Image 1: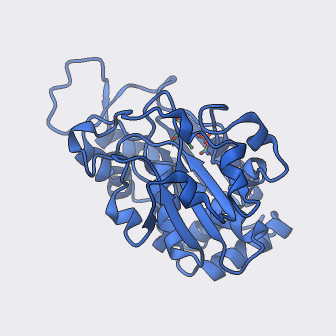
Image 2 (image 1 turned 90 degrees about the horizontal axis):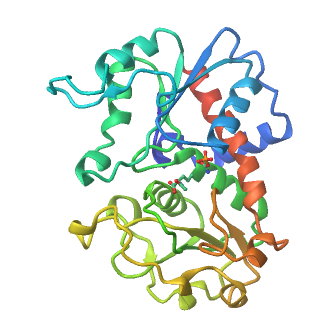
Length: 320
Ligand code: AN0
Ligand code: CP
């Protein structure tokens, strides 16, 4: 594997899940694979789970790890070509990327959507420059439009807990005070559409996700109706994707607290499991009682981040 951004980069899901459960049983099975190999993780944005689980995954494989927080101690980077660099940015990404690549074998990048331009975000301006100029295998640790390590962990979690062969999985928008990226819902939708599940998306009008990720999904604007009979409820906030309202791209256009997942929502499901990628704002996205219930999978889901990252790093190491 040379790149990890999309569901298609993983290939056959059955094989990937088999590998994931093999690693879950013995996460140190491939300890020799990463000897004298270095993973560089570059963070343009904050993280708790991705940072820890990906580092742990690299250690499972015997790798060395370097973590760089671009905003803490590195030079401020210019990302646009052609700019006269007379401002506060001391270095250009076009030098920084090949330099960073000298010191590592694999690169993970976290770089959120900036919401300055839909086009810049949806062309994955930063991540694609890493792919183009580093000469190393590159994986997204949540980039502008995707979060594949999360979606893979979610797939593993659903496989681990499903009671039916083909469960009903409902992804519901929920309110949040600040604008959040569409990366998590984009990837989750893409992965669920490629998996053997009955997938439904529910959100208020104006929150339609990009067709490149959701085309083929059932979209139901009535949240209660969508949740009926669900086996898994996957909650997430996202800001306006700008599909039906281009002028509102990246804005919070709805804060309707009726969408907060609470006991009354869960009551119409098939005793569904509750999922969220975390971090979550309690009593905005989900009530205390729902996230604390025995049916809440938020912790096992986070635990599976180590597994998804181990599989991805293993496959990248095998292809070096
Ligand atoms: C980020 C998001 O919604 O994309 C990261 C989630 C994994 N969340 C926040 O910034 C709070
Ligand atoms: N779910 C997730 O990616 O969390 P972090 O932002 O803490 O890495």
